[in-house]
Every structure is written in structure tokens, then in C-alpha cells.
Length: 361
Ligand SMILES: *[C@@H]1O[C@H](CO)[C@@H](O)[C@H](O)[C@H]1NC(C)=O
Ligand SMILES: *[C@@H]1O[C@H](CO)[C@@H](O)[C@H](O)[C@H]1NC(C)=O
Ligand SMILES: *[C@@H]1O[C@H](CO)[C@@H](O)[C@H](O)[C@H]1NC(C)=O
Ligand SMILES: *[C@@H]1O[C@H](CO)[C@@H](O)[C@H](O)[C@H]1NC(C)=O
Ligand SMILES: *[C@@H]1O[C@H](CO)[C@@H](O)[C@H](O)[C@H]1NC(C)=O
Image (cartoon, rainbow, N blue to C red; front, top):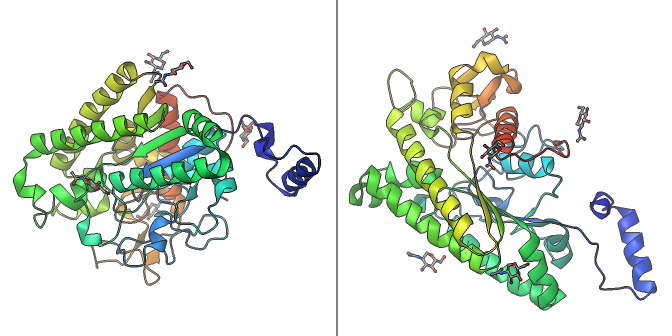
């Protein structure tokens, strides 16, 4: 911990001194990093490098409340839930896999984030977005990272890094919203709700086992929120209410995915796999926004007015007056403030003690 706090010039000076003193190769002890696998809820810039992807947060007003206020690839005005959870656990924020600054030092100090807008548990999810990393693809990229690190810092040090790291997997909403629930995808007519959830959960189980076989020991899977209440789903009905059938799919998925995570945690050697979620809390926040200091839990803050749906937060969109009063930032994604509350509830339910504050930089 003490090392991590001084990543600046001092750290560089100390590293230079270490080289002079012949201590090169000895690394800062106690650094624990994260490897994050996910979709647009956790993307910190990968899709901005996928130039053909239709799911990118590369233009204003994305990022308006983050650091300099420029778009940074997050599908939010500010921080993601994974940003905030990691910050509060005192972990460094991992860098996007496609970020050109990524090298062995960055990976050693901060880990890697493979999350990609549109990504799903299933390979076929979001094919309409043209480019995105599915979970299998993200794990393939992680295997590449492992080989790279072994070649750079040696097998023993690399294996220790991967064994001690925290793993976050946060996926599943796109498998419904951008696959099963859209009739253009063959999964929508091949499966019914029950068989589709089973198919997803079986695939997820194989993926979590694969990550364990690659060295992941401490892993948290983030379950789904009430995705039938995102603005994009509300406009499907004339009343503007939540799509309860969509919420039922999310609940069914959470229940079965939670059981798989618990089973793997007790059966795989040395595994501490946890299921993190805030479904009921998020639903309450949507139902009673005033109780939490919000004023609007139905409409997106960033919107093109009547031109909906899909990705309608663009430079031409208008912003709500007070972003901290809106639960949703765009048609799909919560605001920074909603993410903060969801992250705190997730940590509380996991019994994880908050050791540090989170900042928007
Ligand atoms: C999913 O994609 C990966 C490559 O990213 C491939 O190795 C795997 O065979 C695919 N799985 C299925 C079931 O298509
Ligand atoms: C489990 O942990 C023990 C003690 O650290 C270690 O000796 C053993 O190799 C580990 N097994 C696996 C499969 O990781
Ligand atoms: C809440 O939003 C409504 C419009 O949607 C507005 O008239 C009202 O002033 C807002 N209340 C607060 C406390 O900001
Ligand atoms: C958190 O702690 C409570 C009470 O100590 C316990 O009932 C619950 O199972 C714990 N949850 C997790 C995820 O460890
Ligand atoms: C977080 O910030 C609050 C003030 O905003 C402060 O009271 C608290 O001690 C901080 N917690 C940690 C762990 O730094």
C-alpha cells in the first residue's frame, strides 16, 4: 500500500536509485492489481480504439464530470461502478487493454481492463455493433497478457501477480438487450426465457472455470440490475413503465449465476468467488428516487428529446440541469451518482470494508 501511493516522480527517482544500487528487478511489495472483464458498464476506453464499433463513448457529453471533462471511453458522465468499487478497496484503476500506454510496468502497477461496450457472455451478442470484445475474446486477450508478462518479468513473478490479483467479471445485460430480446438475433427464436438463461449461465460457468484454470483466485461477478427500467426499455410501452418481463429475466439470471458462483467458490481449489449485486437497492432507487436525493429515474439526463432510442447522447443532445438528480445518464447507463450508490451497496452486501475514498479523476 505504501508503495502504491507514491506513483509519481518520487517513485521514479526511487526506481532509478534502486537500479544504481543494484536492486533492479526487486519490485514494490504488496501491490495488488485488478483484471476487469465487462461491457459498457465497465469499459474505460477499449471501444474508442475499435474504430468500426458502433458502441463508443468518444464524443461529448460522455465524461463531462470525469477529470478534465473530455470523453474518455466511459459510457457515463463520470465513474463506473467498477471504478468506484476498486477505488474504495484501495486498488489502482486498471488501464484499458487497447490503451497505447499499456506496457509491463503499467500492468504490474495497475492491471488491465478488457471491458468493451456491447460485450456479452455469448459470442453472438451485439453482432450488430460490428466490433466489441465478447467475454471469451476478453479472456483470450488476458491469456496474451499473461504470456507477455511471463516473458517480461519471468514466470514466477507473473504467476504471483495473477494469483494475487482481484478479478471482476461484469456481464450479461447485452445478452438480453442486444441479443435475446431483439428478433433479428437467432437466439431470440431458438430459445425461450428459461432455456436462454440456462444457456447463458452454463456458458458463464465454463468461462469462470477457464479463468480459474488461468490463475484467477479472487473473483467477483457483478450481477444485473433491473434492466427492464432503463430508459431504452421504458419507451417500449405507452405507459413508460418498466418492462417487467425483462426484469424477470435479470432476476432469474442473477439467481442462477449467483448459485454457480457460490458452487465454484466452494469446489475450485483456493477460489474465493463472490457474487456482487444491488438489484433490490437499484429497484428501490428507481421507485423512490426522492428518498435518495434524485429527482428523475425515468428519463436520461443526456438526450435528443423525442428522437429515441439507441445511443442518443451526442454533442447535439441536451443535458439535464442537474446531473446529480438523474438516475440515468443515457438510454442504457446510470449516472456517476447512481453508480456511487450502487457501488456502496454492492460493497456493503459483500461485507467489504471501504478503505479509501473515490475521486472523479
Ligand atoms: C467464442 O469465441 C472464441 C474466440 O473469441 C472462440 O475461441 C470460441 O470457440 C467461440 N465459442 C463458441 C461457442 O462459438
Ligand atoms: C492452493 O493453495 C496452497 C497454499 O497456498 C498451494 O500450496 C496450492 O498449490 C494451491 N492450489 C491451487 C490449485 O491453486
Ligand atoms: C424536479 O424536476 C421537475 C421537472 O421534472 C422540476 O420542476 C422540479 O423543480 C425539480 N425539483 C427539484 C428539487 O430540483
Ligand atoms: C456478510 O455478513 C453477514 C453477517 O455477518 C452474513 O450473513 C453474510 O452471509 C455475509 N455475506 C457475504 C457475501 O459474505
Ligand atoms: C473519506 O472522505 C471523508 C470526507 O469526505 C473523510 O471523513 C473520510 O475519513 C475519508 N475516508 C477515507 C478512508 O479516506
